[in-house]
Amino acid sequence: MTDDVPAAHTAPYRTARWGCELTFRFPVIKIHDMGRDWAALEQDRNPFAVVVMAHLKAREVRDGAERKQ
Image 1 (cartoon, rainbow, N blue to C red):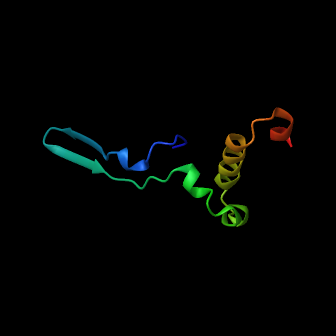
Image 2: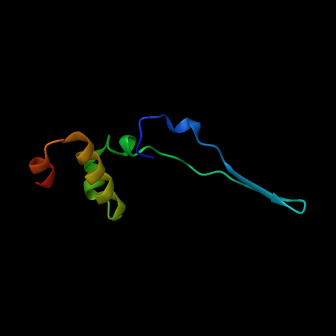
């Protein structure tokens, strides 16, 4: 969820077969929203936090040399 479209547009996953139905609702958060608390991302032990930080910086910085840094 890296685009600028609000997360509210997501719908639950639904499937049905032979009279059985399954609905799966899951929380959605935009990566942009995760970046609001940069300090929390820096402290997070989840490796995905580093990926989120890299993505946010890549969107912010357009100069190739600066991105590499």
